[in-house]
Amino acid sequence: MIVGDFLKKNIVFCIAVTAAIVTMFFVPIDSQYIQYFDFKILACIFCVLAVVNGLHHIHFFEIISKKIIQRFRTVKMAVLALIYLTFVASMIIANDLALITFLPLGYYLLKNSDNLKWMAFTFIMQTIAANLGGMLTPFGNPQNLYLYGKFQIPDLEFISTMFLPFLYSIILITITCLIFVKSTPMKLSQANSEKLDGKKTALMMGLLIISILIVFHGIPYYIGLLAVIGVLCFADRKALLEVDYLLLFTFCAFFVFAGNMARIPGVRDFFGYLVQQNTFLYGILTCQFISNVPSALLLSNFVTDYKDLLYAVNIGGIGTLISSLASLITFREYVKHEPKKGLRYLGLFTVVNVSFLGILIVLVMFAT
Image (cartoon, rainbow, N blue to C red; front, side, top):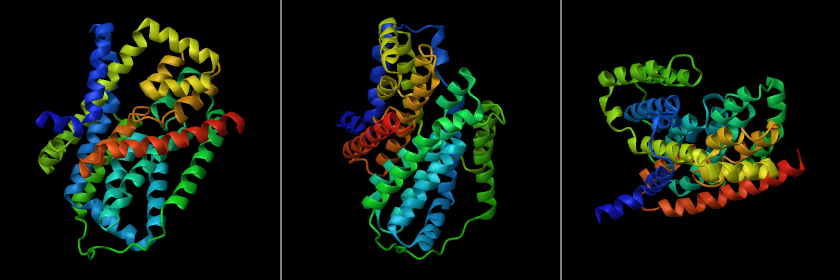
């Protein structure tokens, strides 16, 4: 019974660990395994998770969500504002950190207005916004940064290449929300009597800035990690204890899976053959199985024209739950609030994401 409950609540973690173990039979553990892990990304995620816990403890998201409700008045406008906020944030601080930061805001916004029935849809649209929002700039996500450096793409050329897919994404997200989200008036379920603690808020925002600086190489990741842990040990030890460590282990398992897949000769040759036939379509297909960052690393060795691969690893970030590991963050956040509805969420997530993916594939193939 206990094992069954664990599997239901942590199905993605179990799949990731199983997939990693299976690939280890083909690629035994060796010195190259350590290269699979992106310690900067893991440090960033840990830091932001811890800081977000600290913000929870001072009721930051609850208070801000109530201000949003008072300002936007309807569910449609509030959800759109939240999704646009996530979209823009992903351009600046990357998709995973944008989701960790703004998913809690989405939850409290819906909770405080008695609109939790919209949580699955809102979370899914935030995830799509985060995964597509970062495509415009070289530093918007890890795969862009890697391809930008490998192919020495000029800045303006990069932005002009990705502008139309970026524009299509904004339009699709907006139309979807306008069609499916109702203009129901939003009212606070409780009066907004709480006030932010200025000193604690400033401290947490300072730690959040340190976490973001890691992304931009402003400080080494290990210094930022030690700073966040050190401060929270004194300021809010509970924030460290409540970090979703299972999410971090899930990322590690997928790093092992993707790294091993890229080292299996038959798999590597197979994907190499496919991408030479049609870089765009098979690049997207690869993302659905090993996620977009490993796909960029693997497939870049087989192509000379970067554009189709750049399209593929950005648009391919939507689709399956593992096409972008940032989507795992949303799944974990959702089941934290709705532990019995994980499979239902996965179904809706897949339908919406595959629909978006299909439309964007057609638009990029015939209108770029």
